[in-house]
Image (tube, rainbow, N blue to C red; front, side, top):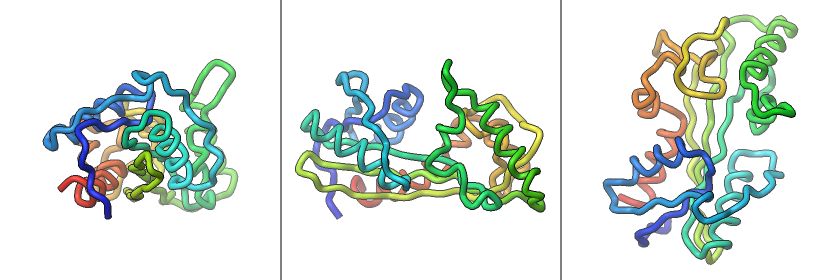
Length: 202
């Protein structure tokens, strides 16, 4: 496994919250983090059918464009009774002509479960795959998950995306009812990050 040896890491995201989260996690390693927007990068089209495939597209495009090692993630929710949907199309379910509407997306997931007559608990898991790519084309891939169940009605106002309907195993609250930093310690992204740090930074 290749170690990260530079002092600057490009994070291939335009999401300021995600950028801040990653910068905080890598702070102990003396790594300076820059975002895609800062480098004027456009988001490449995600044409793969797996989280790893889409994360690879974003990481390699950013590394090639800037000459910097680049970190990207692709994440989403898989609902067991819906055969893993929405999966890599998690964000697509929320797309509208005026932006993303995750209330609509969560309602769609609930309505499909009801229409299928799926028995409770509605098992689900959040997935995150991190890819660290170098300009020479090398990459390292780190998948992370957290298991739980879909609950209805929605609960909580923290977090984002499908957080109000996802209750992780071992907890009586949804991601959206948790403090942001408490959630970040147990999330699918935290699982992937722990593997990334162990593999490339420790």
